[in-house]
Image 1 (spheres, each protein chain N blue to C red):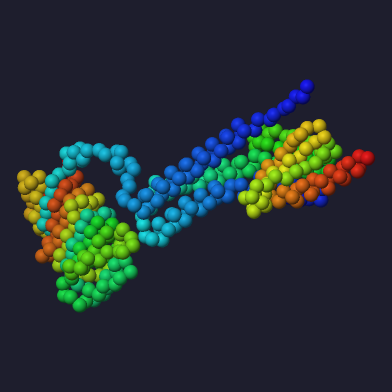
Image 2 (cartoon, one colour):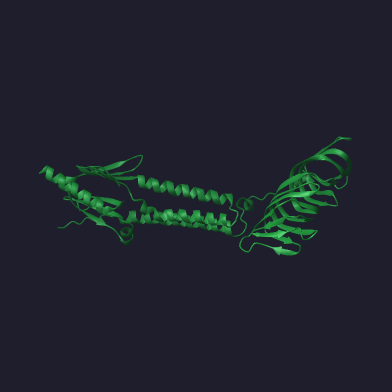
Length: 235
Length: 152
């Protein structure tokens, strides 16, 4: 009688195939994730899952409006919209295009969804460096043909008479000697300051600079005025 | 493949992980293309890719280090495992013949399996996925002949 021994190796081969298939599926998942997040759409994983209410933040903040002198300030962040008007004997670099700003006395520039730095003082905007989804220069829309965002740089400082920044400007702290009018809680408290040290903490709102006035409208957590009168308002 | 005067030691060829290396390359290239074209790359994306790369390299190298084959003047040794190791030793004089198995892809990349048969068993040992298997077979046959002639 013949006895035939058959070695079972198929099980191990199938197991190997399963592992290979699993690795390939994981790779496809990771690769798709990379392509989607890098090339398409705004993806915010945690932002979509953890969305808290801002009401607790609003309850812990003070409504604030002020018309003050213009400080020297540098702000970095995301701005829904920046509008400015000014001139410069230099160039504005938008992506790989350069626009000369010296031809027109007052150039009107709009930056949509700007992400970057802006630094200014009473006279000039010294730094605009970042990215925006769209740039409008004197009514002409300039956008990148290939990319979602366009790199923006001012080659030199810009003399300006108008600067408006959208509704979600965040400034951790502003502290400087200034003069002007401050309204707190919808005018319930109003202060006239005259060359006094004003400190504002955790400002969130809109900023407008025009007619040599620095206009803030939003929410703060803390206000301190030191000078002729000492005022301290906290949440 | 390490070759001393009388000893040849081999491990699995890295060519069997070519697909994994191509996956790694595809991910790195896609990140590089996104970066060059000015796209913002999500921090989570970079972490996921980093974890995949580290795990891929770790598991391929671990798998490769898991097996070790050696031909010395007296025996052929197959060792499996890193922490707990199983070693099988086969005397050269017991070997009847060796065969070489390569599919088309393995022939193109010059790696394959070597089956070592003994007089008593049909397929005693398989040396899996080694580089330049024909050279291994030649070396094994030379050692086997020498061992048998010394015995006689």
